[in-house]
Length: 446
Image (cartoon, rainbow, N blue to C red):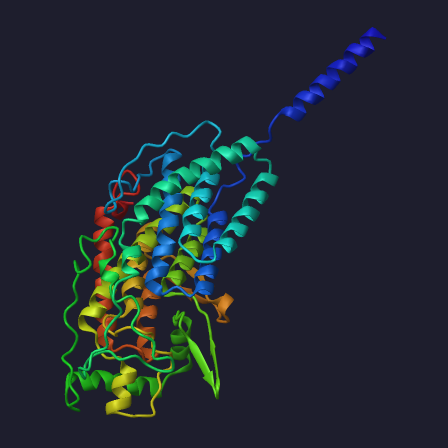
């Protein structure tokens, strides 16, 4: 009987010991899926809150940087962006042994992203659901608490950095004053919206030395003479849009990315919300990371590097837009060629030169090419949620070329804006790749 009792006690003790042992939670977060889901929610909110393309690029960048900095702190050969990005001061962080770094990176992303949008409750709800799902997979409460606290500590440093980029000050700057010069940009139908973000070149870039570091050559000299270069450029837009193939139309719609699309039917006017150009490329970055089966650290690098290139791309592009303030094809063609002509795509509310999609697409494509290679095949399903089919690409550069030429097919840009915009984006990316280290060697060497 005594032996039985001893055996029973031993079994009970062993059972209690096993029940007290923690589950192995090290594999709960292994890739970027949780951050991709957070980014997707952020995209939905950007669309819901109707942020402009330049502002949207800012909203993507800072959370991505915060998540990446946590990845750096987890160990390995990744290099901090502190001391590399303009004005991003170095700071030491001490993580306790309870910190689960993949979770901390996610917490950093959510905190920064939530503070940059209007509909904060939507992001907070998404965050709470993600944390609940992670905890349910066996992550102990003390680890959850320590990880979230550490991630938010890193987030606070990034938030402080973001507040110094002149964005908040620019909210009170003067609106763009419409010029009466015949070559100057004019608001276009159907909403005749004022020019957005005329002072975006005053926002602090991450890597560029100045907004005009890669200043484009001036646009073609304005003229209404039928034998002039400018007239021929406008006529090219007019003729191409009058004879588009289905493939050309599909390309134009796929890369439209206009968050300002307004539809008018009779006396009824309604908005059609869409993803921004930067949002499209952040979607491509996530798709590529999944395709390459990157771990969570590499995924954080991919999103942060892409977002930085996009952010600086918009600054460089907008610097030229409000220097040249060039008339859009819709205005010129209606006045000098055909008063009834309409572009396939709705003209965005800002000057023509250079093409924003051409700049930022090429900047992002060069970064992604360095990360994944020259011939990286991917299926771009970014626009499926907005009623468009997938498109497949054999490389990021081919995707960027298509994004750029889509602006001609859409009738919203002359060819020089596409050519010189693409050049600007490539120059910006090359400078970025030669300047920023994300690993032990420059990103350009990876």
